Length: 165
Image (cartoon, rainbow, N blue to C red; front, side, top):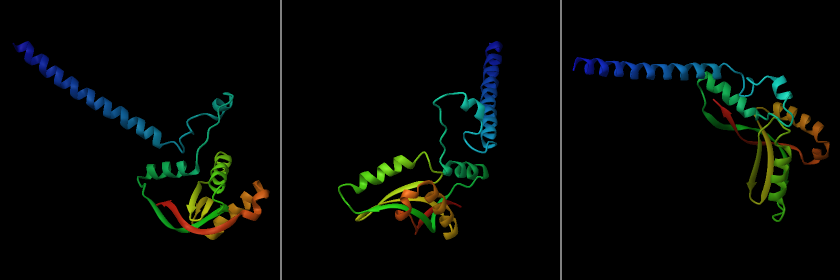
């Protein structure tokens, strides 16, 4: 009978130790993940380069969110700001498809978030979340240098933007 009590107490201690070990492992993994600058930074560039057909794509928002998570603040709020508008059309038969095609074409090539919006009767494609007009103007200049054929359709517009606070 005494051996049953000993076995029961041993089992309870083992169970508690297992919980502590799991918590410690999760904490160590979390600290390791938070120490990285971006999600893909643990991947060595030479490792990725050695794998043909593999392309790492990370939206600029991911880095900002990761940094905010490391600081412990992740509240996304809307404020007045600016975006670069690159498309606007009210041709109901084609505008939606053209806006979505433009988004698909540019998704992997730009370092800004792409917003496809329907503001009746217009379909619009806008880029970025810029706090100041100057930031938007600088990005517009970069965009027009990359895509000179879109210069006539590219404008800076006031909009509600999403930022972390």
